[in-house]
Image (cartoon, rainbow, N blue to C red; front, side, top):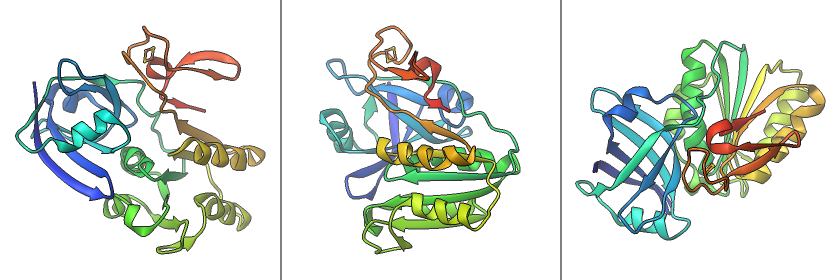
Length: 244
Ligand code: FES
């Protein structure tokens, strides 16, 4: 059993939880996820590990209420227990000093790109973060993202904070101004990751995205997370979740 030691609502329908899982906390790296089950009849869902505290032995998850399980999870409180947490799963993000790394996080993807931003910062990269959401009330992890970024930009669909528009416009502006970009990481809704990949491709900027299909076992056995990468079948849970 895994105890919830902290819970906070950080935006509309979006919650942060810190959960005691010392072995996962001591091993996890940026980009990895856990499979979680609330109780015996519950379904298993994948959630990216947004952070950890090794001394306290906790991992941090950030989730949006999007279905029955996340709705049930959102009703749990500090002191409640989860039945299973399996992880860390998936390949960690490949981190090195690339030079200038742009990290794009959209919606809940901001929480998921955050550990990548921290790891790139610690490896000495010049990190530029672009975060986006429909409006300012849906922006999350702003302080944490800004703390680890040399440049920090916000885009909202309605212009309520930062520039009015999409993060791809911010990225395109940077490229137009001649900014040398060595790598881009994009995490968020599939249309956002697709738009970022299409934008950077003609400039030959290496671009990594984190896929988030439905998963059942998370260990390469069920096949339900199968995707085609370069026309070759891959399982997101064991071959990813990040792909070029
Ligand atoms: Fe079953 Fe990936 S979740 S193979």
